[in-house]
Length: 121
View 1: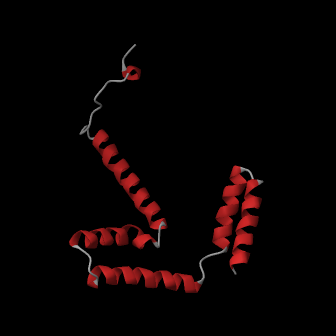
View 2: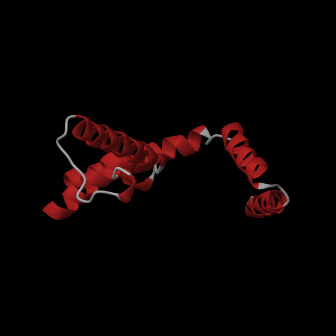
C-alpha cells in the first residue's frame, strides 16, 4: 500500500508540474472533492478528538494545559480539523471589518495623519 501511495503522489506531482497555475488549482480542488476521507478515517479522527477531550477532563494536565487544550479544541479540534482555522480567520476578518467600518461611519475613529491626497488643491 505504501508503494502505491508513493507512486500516486509522484504521478500527481509530475502531473502538477506541467499544469499552469489556474489549471493546477482547479485540478487540486477537484481531486480532493472527488476523493473525500474514507469513513474509517473520519471515525478515527472523531476518536482522536474524543481522546483529547478526555485527556483535558481526566488527564494530568496543569490548569494552563487545560486552557490551552480547550483553545486548541475550539479552534482546530486539536489539529485534526485544520480547515476550521480558515473559518475562524474569515470570522475575525469580517468582524474587524464591521467594527472598523462602523467606527469610521459614526466618526468614532479618525486618521492620525492627513494624507496628501485629501488636501484641497
